[in-house]
Length: 199
Image (cartoon, rainbow, N blue to C red):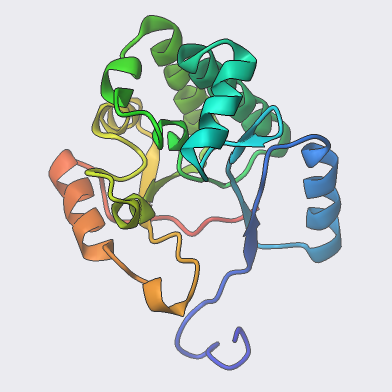
């Protein structure tokens, strides 16, 4: 595709991370082998239990760490570890941890959780990475993308770059909800002059 469309569009190659036992070394080996243009730093597991699949698995992870509040804290701590170690140019679905939590808006305001969110956003700003405004949340029945409005506002205040993404899992969902996402970002006050991610 890079060769075929080189006269009309720049096609970037990248991959998305996981966050499970041994992930840092594995991601580094993949990056060294394939030399992608960039990577997306994302977390889908806490203590090797997937947190974005079934409510039962989410509950299992929550029980293992000592409750939902602790699950959020551990999620954002793992995210900080990932960003520090791998320095990804895009941070995927920043607050995915809220997926199976109907009380997530209140929980995100709790001081010990909010402090971790700010810490991670400050690191993202320092690295010049881009925050993924992940619109696939709408496909899952959510009323707002990842990131939620309170985090989006904090990112804006900190000067964190934010760009919409469809997180497409197939051709049928490429570009889905992008116009809606762009409109939300513009209304919030973000620039739509997005940089090209690079390693």
